[in-house]
Length: 128
Image 1 (tube, rainbow, N blue to C red):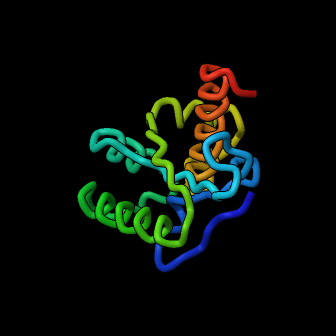
Image 2 (cartoon, one colour):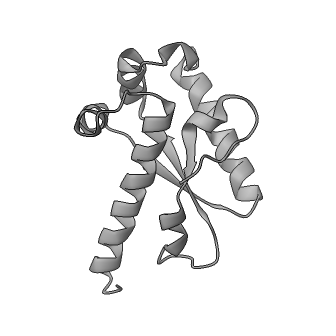
């Protein structure tokens, strides 16, 4: 796995996984998982993050940056998937793996969740 690097702080939102290249939805288009927060989840994740000083000052600021990043990545021909983050599930996931709740861990979490969701969708639709 590797992080898609781009301008500014967007690196902490985006992770491109080699495993996701084999997505059932698009065999030719690389997939980018973007950590996506609901307002109350954003604040909770920020409160417990080891890199909270790197978060935007408000949910609205974060949302504007994340939307712009998603648009930019789509413009580069990537399939962008927003991965909803539940703060308590993220904490548990980090603890199970011995990871700090930082940008890298949140990106890995998003990539893993997207892969799981796409695997479930494949099973539901009868694809393997």
